[in-house]
Image 1 (cartoon, rainbow, N blue to C red):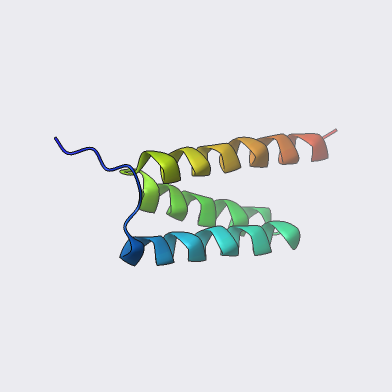
Image 2 (image 1 turned 180 degrees about the vertical axis):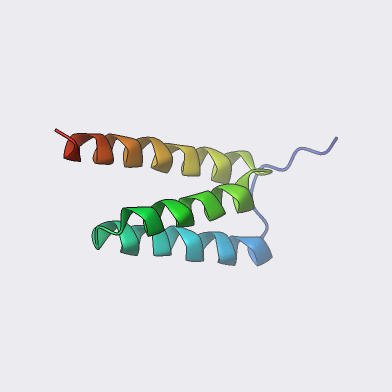
Length: 71
């Protein structure tokens, strides 16, 4: 089994597109769309530990953000 540490450049382009779309939708308060982009980034990055961990951190902070809005 080969361990991939970083996402290849040809895939990183699409990963970054999803992350930027997530940020844009989140700043516009479109939470469903923002989450959808995080899910796509998660799928693209799941074989690559750095990208995968980065998306999980984003997901965690997304959860904190929406939890605060429910109060």
